[in-house]
Amino acid sequence: MTPAELEAVAVDVAGSAAAFLRGVTGTGEALRTKSSPTDVVTAVDIQSEEFIRGELLRRCPDSSIVGEELADEVGGSGVGWIVDPIDGTVNFLYDLPVFAVSIAATRDGTVVAGAVADVLRGEVFSAALGSGARLDGVPIAAASSDGLAQALVATGFSYHAERRRQQAAALARVLPATRDVRAFGSAALHLCWVANGRCDAFFEHDLRVYDWAAGALIATESGAQVELPNELNDDLVFAASPTIFGPLRELIVG
Image (cartoon, rainbow, N blue to C red):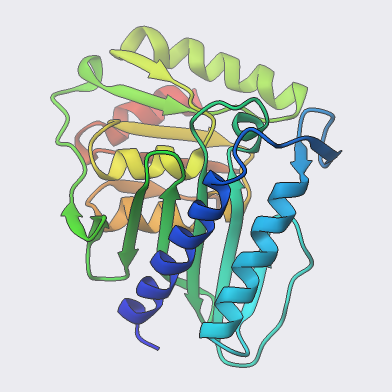
């Protein structure tokens, strides 16, 4: 399948999963915790991922799937999927209206397509490698920021106490130098909001690949400059308008 065809699958399945979640919003209860007592999983997370996996395998048999909540599936087709069934589970648990479904498609290990469905707004962001980014099928572009002092920056926080202390130090450097900072609780949506100019930048440490795989491609294809975890930056995910990327990164890394 081409990247455009994989994008279409991701859009369809993410939209269907979002429709399922709209029907159960407000019913979530913490089922268990993962990396820390504040990192929760609900039964709906698992139900959503089971639904997504079933739909992806129906459309693309023999795919590999990496998901947040269930064991990896290994297929032989060369197509893979990276799934976050609810990005923003804590918001979902507290009935706060910012959470999403994130689905990225890979070909031989490279992310080539993705979709992020904003569950309650009913929006679907998507992209295919080399073909730009879209919101509900309409092309989008990252903002051309007037400068760091005018930038609205999004961020998020780890579930681990020591990492939160480090993030607080970075925030203390960024906040005085920018218009303002927002933390809505969904990395996937933060990246998409950079992609269509609702935010000028997003940074967060301690994310997992299912948090950022689709959103990072969407941001990149929109024209944002994107940095992903590597051996040089530890675990930073950072997307910004190219005009502010350099000076903002200096503040983030200290």
